Each structure stands twice: as C-alpha cells, then as structure tokens.
Image 1: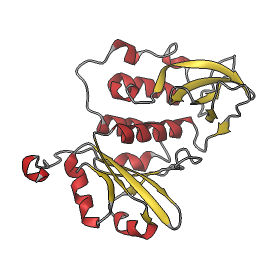
Image 2: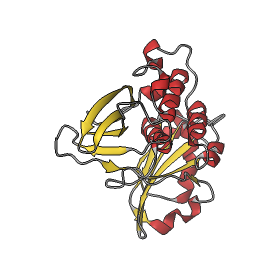
Image 3: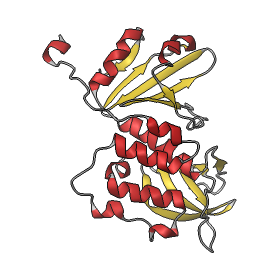
Amino acid sequence: MLDAVRPVPAPGPVPGVEWVDLVNTEPIQALESFVLGWFPAEETAPADARSTAGEPDSLPLALSAFHRLAGLRPAIHRFHDPVLRHPKHASGPLGDRLVFAEWAGASMDWSIPWSPHGPDKTDPFVWHTEDPGNDDAEPILEEEPLSRFLLQFTIFEAWLAAPYHARTYTMPTARLDAQWDKLRPVPLSPFLPTYQGEKFYVAPGLLAALSSDEHEAMVSFGALHRGTLTPLLEHGFRWVRFDG
C-alpha cells in the first residue's frame, strides 16, 4: 500500500566508488573524491565554513586539506559530530595536543601531538581520549594516522547523516556471503573498536557499516536514494529499519 501511494523512484545518477582504490596510497585524494561525489555542490558556501584555526598552512597537511574541502562541500562541517572548524590546543599526560574533533558534547575527542615549534608536516598519529575533562584520562592511540582517520571519520559521519537508512537484526555472519560481490570493503581499521567496531563497505550511492565476529553480524546501510536500498530486499534479511 505504501509503495502504491509513495512509489520508490529510480535512484538516478549515484556517486561511484573508484576512490576506494586510493585509500592505501593517496588517502587525502580518496577523501576528496568521496566527499565531492557524495555531497552535492552548494550555491554559496558560508564564510565561516572556509575559516580554520589560523591559516591552512599552520595545520598538518591532511587537516588543511580537509578544511579546504569543507569550503567546497560545507555539508561536512554540518555533521552531528563534525571535525572542528577551529581546532583547540590542550595538554595531557602525553604532552601538548591539538584537538580537531569532538564527540557527543565533548565526552570524547580526537587530537594530534602539537609541538610548540610548529605542526608536524608529515602524517601524525591520532589520539582518542574519553572523558577529556578528567585529568586522569589516558589517550588511546588510533590505528590510523591523521590522513586515513579523517577519511574514516568522514565516512562514518556521512553514513549517519545519509537521508535513507536500513539496519538488520543480528544474524549469522554467513548470511552476508551473497553481499560481498556487490559491496567493496574500504581498507581501513574498524572504527571505535571498543564500541561497535564498524568496518565500512561501499557500493555506488551506498555506505554500509558492519559489526561482526566469526558467528554473528549486524549491518547498517546509508543511502542517498530510497531506490538504492530496494534491491536489498532480495536477500530476505529481517530489518530493524528499512527506508527503501
């Protein structure tokens, strides 16, 4: 009945996934290609979307590139938990750091080491800190360096912000075997491994986050068009939510 009164339109053009080939060798270029394809251009970018803490050259290469990209696609600064337009200087048990992203009202953050003599121009490692307001909070080293982490973080936030979603109930991991010829794995470590530890997969116009072990799995999809989700019905999954 819903399909009769609200038919599912054909998806039309959808962004491709060629950027996955660049993740291991050119992660900044992979991020740029993903963002420019996934998010449409806007008529005018707000002036503050192009501003960062100081000139772009004062930041590490990957973070400068991210903020320049946000000038072209301001949507990435409107995520629920965006990369900060104005990174913040902080200190901790491991020394000075530059906080570039916060989560859930600053209940956790991500930062890079910050030298008083200037930023590391290479690809610095990333610290993840839970409850950063606590003086005893110990930073945890992320598996990905800054360039790859920014891609990982952006994919996660784009998946959350997608206009259409589908999420399965927990099922045997083997039930997903038929999906692997349609979904490309993004060669990044699991995101937030102490929580869900999602691994990301992509198809044209579709982002998938998989939480699994050897026995059980749950997968959530984010799509730009309802019609991109509709073919998933063929697999007979039980859905917690399905917008297709």
